[in-house]
Length: 237
Image: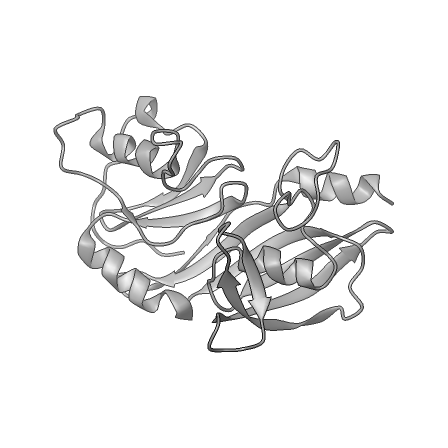
């Protein structure tokens, strides 16, 4: 990973945001590793307890009058952990969003059961119902194209560990596609089932490769997969 040639001074440690690890930062972008359970942006019930709110406080260094802020480029589901890229000005945000579909995104997931095909691409059109739940349709006029590449890395009698390439970026795409295969993501209460003893949604955004908005250099950011993923797989052998 190469940095831009612009000098940058990171805010003091006391402003480090809870629930977020800073992976990279310069004058144009801020890349973090988000913990499971933290919203990316606010919803109707939660305003302050979000990655967006905490990172704005971080870049302002405690100065409420500061004009420094972060801009949303993409989102992760509340219960998904891993890499998120934020922009630090409108131009960087616009550039990243326009190029976003062409960037590489790699996820890891632990799913229920065993897939018959150990590698492939799941394709459907995704629509949303009135309860804000996504579902697959075959009619392209009723949904947006979604493509999810996957490869089985390990299997146990109960679970499988998958490496996933997010080929399009639709809401809840990975979770819906894996549920469609009869192998929902472990801990997915929305598209799977509630389970006792499962600590979190077993989906992690492990790596993103982008082109930097200023330097135009290709940069890859990674977040180590939580140890709980392998622990769960071992416990089921």
